[in-house]
Length: 164
Length: 164
Image 1 (tube, rainbow over the protein chains, first blue to last red):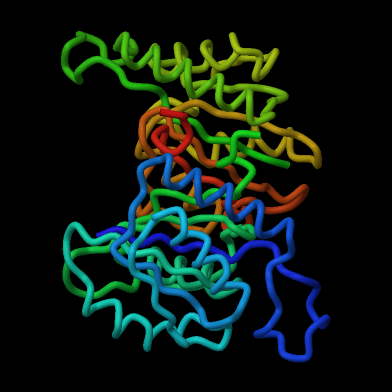
Image 2: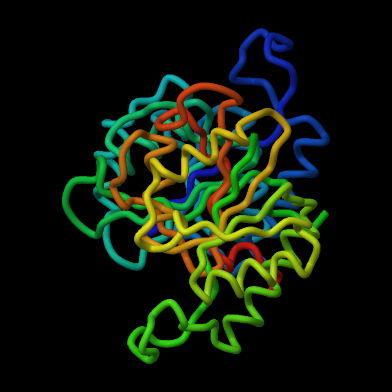
């Protein structure tokens, strides 16, 4: 099973909205995220499901990914919000845990990098640099415990993904 | 400072040469490595130095990288051979440790993945998937200890780097 963790694109300045959850992608963020989405499609990636944080900037990112046909299914999970809880989310993930599945989640930093570290090395040390619209790829064991048992096969900022 | 760790390209079958150190890249390995090298150049990467393991398959890889002008300087280090020692190599690296430097090393698995893990998380657990002609990018602190103090900003197999 493969799990792709994707950070939302460039959003408006923090503090510019009364509710941070409403902060949308900037126009630049939309354009760059579209280019990343197209590139992922060109690379042959397809997901059984994209799950996203309910915050606007994440939902917009996930919708862009869906629009280029990276996945037919899109759902929200409050566990992917900045206040989200990895243990709760893993309970859900385990219901999907089987060979051949490919899932993508769209969320926030520092959560995504810390979750990846916990899944791969068993603890979070904030040593992964996850840029906006950046992507990580993990292989997930088909059964059993997840923490400390996944492998990292991909981590890229948009600048090493796009053609210009 | 940035450190790029690059695994040699596809080489002949293990055991097909009396001395494993002589095992060269296959024709397919040469072609794919050339495409990776050109892509790294297109992405704007340039190195102050490429250091390579003395084994033929690594040296060929490093020469391909140099030929596309990723670096003017190329040198060998026995510390990058499969039997190489991270502590010895770090003694050398520290003589280069300063801001704005960009180094690339060409070597072997499992060493490269394990070294990256030690530099980033302090210990090797073989949880990084480093494909042949794959690339990792680490930021290295400008001074002080290196083990456990670097950050990983890039890890890619060739399939997510090339255009087809």
